[in-house]
Structure formats: structure tokens, C-alpha cells
Image 1: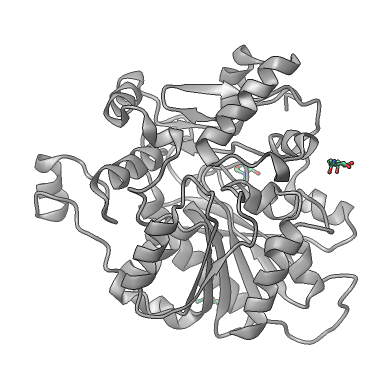
Image 2: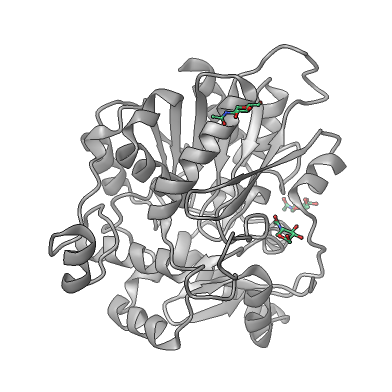
Length: 388
Ligand SMILES: *[C@@H]1O[C@H](CO)[C@@H](O)[C@H](O)[C@H]1NC(C)=O
Ligand SMILES: *[C@@H]1O[C@H](CO)[C@@H](O)[C@H](O)[C@H]1NC(C)=O
Ligand SMILES: *[C@@H]1O[C@H](CO)[C@@H](O)[C@H](O)[C@H]1NC(C)=O
């Protein structure tokens, strides 16, 4: 594994490197164990052939008990992995804080990432392998993962906490597989990404159509962690000025919040981000941004007719999402905008709370790497879990 790392997001045409971090990549179970917690890995296979690995923190040295515990499942975002919930350490990361509070913590890993990269028949270098968006994660991955966890723990239901794309997948899952709603005790949606047309992120600000064409022409369907690293090492920026520029680009994508940014934490975070990137996920978001709807992937009229038997892609039926939902949002988040979260709140049948993170400049990445993420967010997540 190369030490030198990595990116700022995709500022419409290019990937830009953030900086060169001489930090070692440590797997999620190793990180958990290093911090004195037990860690487990579990594997499932999806209906369409992907091997997915879940990580688990079954208990905490601060909460020793043999009793059965309620289960919390944490689902990462685009380009993420289970590492997102533990890399900040036991003082701040939600994975540990939940274990300390007496929960059985399970961490998802999306198809394509370091821990979920195998497939029964497709090679990870083939187009077929990468032909998925968050639609497939919702329809195929979450059902098998949740069934596995509930069977293993003998629990009737679980708490689902998802961030960003982890919420997109959930709302697809709960609308396309409505029979699963009874298995969700509560959904806590952090920075919900369902309706995204009000986004002011620079990722959507450019000519989305041009970017879409470029992605198609370049014939890149998916980028793995190591591969992304390779491509991006050409853009290594080590000097201070460039680093500042890179941070500016990051802020243009997620919202400006220097108060919550600790550069050494960001550097550490970039050892784990980005994980796998499926271009189809991005294109699907671009479509949602353009149409303002929440619908399946648009293949164009001809293919849509074959796949969906209609010219336009079908809208997901959010009315079928009967789970209790808490929507957590921040006023300065450029990707998950307040108006869009309010719109979602109006459509859902069973929203129980809208929670605004009490920090005016809180942005999309602060949910994971914000300096005060424990007091501003994570403690409150645990309170919500206790409350509902
Ligand atoms: C993928 O499969 C290979 C070969 O069977 C195995 O060595 C590797 O551990 C698997 N990786 C994961 C993440 O399951
Ligand atoms: C549940 O787990 C048991 C073993 O723990 C296994 O035999 C059974 O097949 C599982 N059921 C499902 C539906 O996964
Ligand atoms: C940033 O994080 C590092 C590593 O955790 C810590 O030592 C340092 O005190 C932090 N700096 C600020 C300004 O919070």
C-alpha cells in the first residue's frame, strides 16, 4: 500500500489531490483492536454475486456485560468504508461511543470497497463489476446485510444510522423492499441525500452534462482505492500553498468551515478516503440533481422502455418508507440542503424529528471529521437512539 495520499473530491472534471500524508493504512478491525475493543468480520453474498464484509464491535471495555444488546448498524457514504466510524479514535468516533453506551455495533462496507471487492463471477477490473449505483446497494445489499445481522444477533430489529449516500441507499431499500421497515427500529439520516436539486456544492455547479459525457467517453466505470491512489499521485501537492488550495476546493464541495477542520485529522482521514468510486453512482446523483426527483437510473428513453416499460425512470415510492426517521441536517452543508431535507420530511409517512446540528458552519464532512463531532453530533445521536 502506498503511503502517499490522496484526493479532494471530484471538482467536476478533475480529481485533485489534497496532500501527501505519510500515514499508514490500517484496516478497520486492526484499528478497533488497537484501541482495546474487540472486532469481528462477517461476510455475506448478495443475490447479484457481490461478497460484502461487515465489521462489528460487539462490546466495549467500558461496558462489560453478557446480556443481549440492541444493534446499531452504521452505513458509510460515497467513497467511504467502515473506517469512517472508527478512524477518529474512541474519544470521538461514533462506532466506539455506541459500543461504550452498550450497543452491539455493526459497520457496513459497500460493494467495491477494500473489504467488499470480491464477486462470484466478475473481475473487479471489468465493466460489469462496476455497473451499479446506490440503487443496487439499496435493493440487493441492505436486505442481505440486515437479515444476516438480525439472524446472528437474534434481534427483531435494529437502529440504522446512515450518512449521505448511506441515507440514499436506505430510502431506496425501504421503498423498494417495504417489508423490511418492520426490521428498522429507527432510521437516523445524517446529511440526507434524497432530493438534491437545491445543492450548492461545486460538484454539481459545473456543467453536469459535460462531466457526464466526459465520464462516458473516458470509459472509466469504477476506481478502486489503490487505483485512485495511482492516478492521483500525479497531482501530489506537498507545499503549503497548494495544500490551502486543495482545502478550498474541499470546502467548495462540502461547505466552508475552517473552525471544525483540523488539518492533521483531515490528513489521517485521507488515508481512508476515497475508497471505491462507482461512476454510475455519481451519474445517478447528477440525474437527481438535474430532475429534482428521487428516481431510478435514467438510461435514456429506449433502454428505459426495455427496463422499466416507461420512457422515464420510475420514482421511488417514499410513501412506503414506514420506518421512524430522524433527519439530521446542518445549515452550511452544501450537498444536503435544508430545503431538500424539509421536502423529504414532508413526503415521509413517519418522520419523528428534524435535528439541526447546533453549529452554524457545520458542513458535510464535519459529520465524520469535525473537531467537535462528539459534542455537536455523536452524543445527540446516542440520545436519539435512547429516546426512540
Ligand atoms: C477475495 O477473494 C480472495 C481469493 O478468494 C481472497 O484471498 C480475499 O481475501 C478476498 N477478499 C475479501 C475482501 O473478501
Ligand atoms: C440463521 O443462522 C443460522 C445459524 O446461526 C443458520 O443455520 C440459518 O440458515 C440462518 N438463517 C438465515 C435466514 O440466514
Ligand atoms: C488536531 O489534531 C491533532 C491530532 O489529534 C491534535 O494533536 C491537535 O491538538 C489538534 N489541533 C487542534 C487545533 O485541535
